Image (tube, rainbow, N blue to C red; front, side):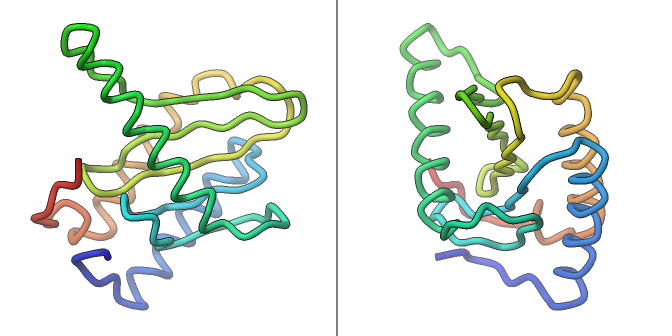
Length: 138
């Protein structure tokens, strides 16, 4: 389980930031989740339960980290997949939080890494608890 609380005031800040981000990158769905699969905030809709998506995204990101270690310590900053109708971009906010973003179409938006980095910075500024978290799930 998550080892910190997000207060309702902070949760509203997070949702506002994520909603603005969703519109600017034209994502179908954006979820902020703890590495244990707990959903902290979400915007948009997928039409399916997002909890399995959060859990599987965590597993996917953790697998990529292990592959990086096998390749001599490569530190992958994100994981992405492109499908026939949708694409997904998974990136860390810190050691315990991930952003999972679902986009329409087969390709990710141009400069998604830059846009994602800006959102992460704004989230950390808005909710200091995100960087004060003491646990590191590996």
